Image 1 (cartoon, rainbow, N blue to C red):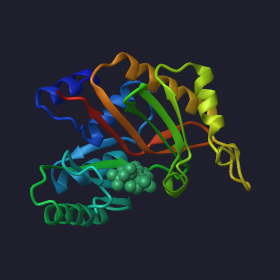
Image 2: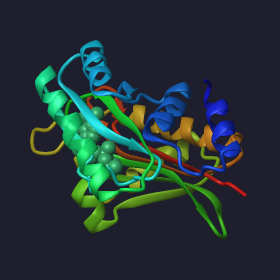
Image 3: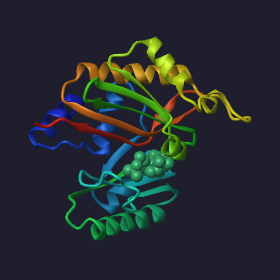
Length: 232
Ligand code: ADP
Ligand code: MG
């Protein structure tokens, strides 16, 4: 399925929330680098996909009814063997079924384990007066405590992307801090531009949340993504 077909299908089902797998599929299609993410409906399939992707892997609950996956005990990272994958699969499924008995669970997503990077967030929200607004900020604990985020009205140009990243109070963390390597700021600007073009040209998108994105010396990887559609 193409990204547009995913959006159309969800609309027909009157479903506003896309799964992480669907969201990453759409973002990958527009040239945004996401960790390889595949759906496993059974434990055996989870092992097969882990072997295909290559250890270590991450398993996460996949359900349109569960949006905060780690709150539900639904994220297990750094699984290094078939044994660990099998155990994680059972734990995730049991946890989800007991905490969300009425949730519709399609399985688990099996993902490549991204190497650590500087955590950032990127996304799009709708503002009552400004319409579609892009957002960029530092992720992790810092963003939760400091709300260190920059906003721009869609569509943005290169210069806006440059400014958004420069505006962040914690931008030293991106420029290399205490021996840590600087991140690929030009790559992050490109991501913002791709996101802006996409939401500008695609009707029916209410919200996009990439949280976290790991930023590297070269490139970046989206590790978690959520897309909400406007259903009427
Ligand atoms: P939630 O729905 O709770 O936001 P996430 O998918 O963001 O769940 O996973 C929680 C945390 O697990 C992330 O913030 C990240 O630190 C880590 N994580 C998730 N997926 C991966 C991955 N593919 N590679 C490495 N770390 C990951
Ligand atoms: Mg997340």
